[in-house]
Image (tube, rainbow, N blue to C red; front, side, top):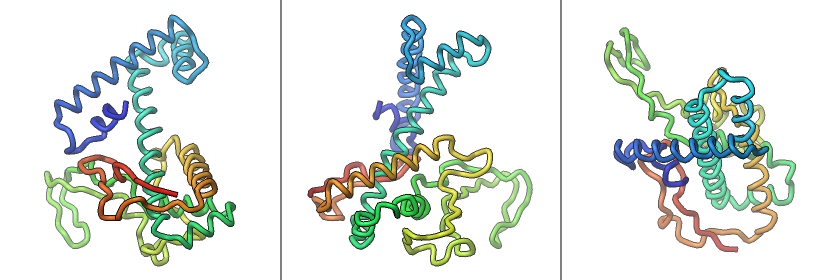
Length: 238
């Protein structure tokens, strides 16, 4: 699962052929699970989706069900797993904030919002936009056919919206970040991701009060060539 997920989130880490093979392997896997749930109904999410499809035929095609399941897995696991590691790494650099969150758990919700604002999960610029007409952006003339990468994550560091955006302030309020997108593009799993981060970080700090890096900071290897960023591994000790 992890290998398939990495390949599907690759920008340059995998070849197009490797990404296509991973997509097919994952589709085959979930198609088999859909078939299994149809033969042996279950009360899990996939089982519920299959039952809904069978009860209200025409709501979802089998291939749509497979793709929906695939996207739920990737978007619901890889993103949060990477962000837990990103948040932990950042807090390990800030002992004062770690101590504050240990002694005042009520500050965790605000801290998670600030961590989401402060830490870009994705590059924000892996989707290209092609101009269809002349336009000027920041003093640069864009011509029809020109390709533009718009790093949307920069919005969370906009000095017109956030005072001293380069400072991590776990008490920042208000905090109108767009880490989960906006409008019709707002993440469907935003509330679940918030809860997962609050619980994971809260339990980690409470159970491991002496948590610290087990290697030199320079030894940490970071993901590259992916749509998401984060450490490949985060060795710690306590």
